[in-house]
Image 1 (cartoon, rainbow, N blue to C red):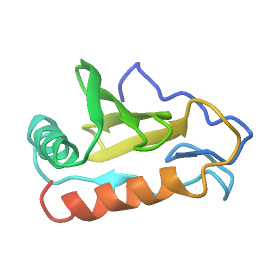
Image 2: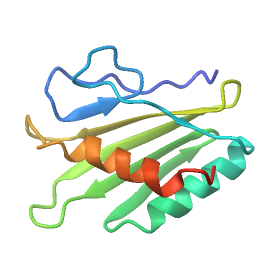
Image 3: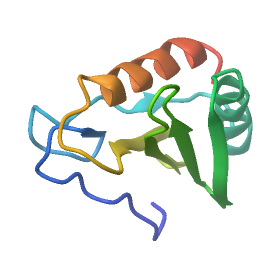
Length: 120
């Protein structure tokens, strides 16, 4: 696996991560069949269709996006880490500020899962 890792979720309920162990934060990773580079392009293309997103870092098999909410302009950080050995994409989606997120981060990641289903 990569030397890089995802940031752990805080104790607050405004974060989901495929690497979290507790039920409140845990979420299933994405899987891919193509090469990591091809899968990454599919994911980037899907995210590109979503409003108010910005790719802030791409480094090897790692992506970091910012998602900005429409009304209050809150920024959420979303990280993706591709594991070429297991053909798995681990990810973390977390609000930068506040405590709760009304399930926004989990819904976003499930929406992305649907967008890339069968394409990666």
